[in-house]
Length: 119
Image (cartoon, rainbow, N blue to C red):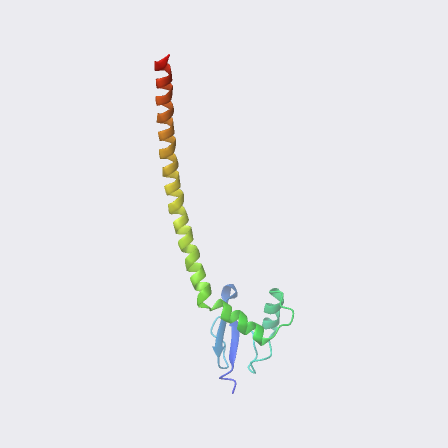
């Protein structure tokens, strides 16, 4: 039953899709034949482009699972949050540095004024 065998297809921008049945989703090219184990020419080219030494359907399953993993999504969200926090921290550091510079400048003026008053 080929309709139950998981197959893989590549869409735009190299996105790998998992599907069952005979027809690949619209706008995609199948990477695996209907038997679920043989790669199509597109599948072989896909594996060669990624430097996979022994292209087979199992490698495509692992790649697809990696791309559709929640860990990848969570990592992307964490990266975005880090970028947002980094800008906020840089602004806080900038304002703190400016306050320190003004404080040191006023201390320096007070020291010089005190030194000239002693003379």
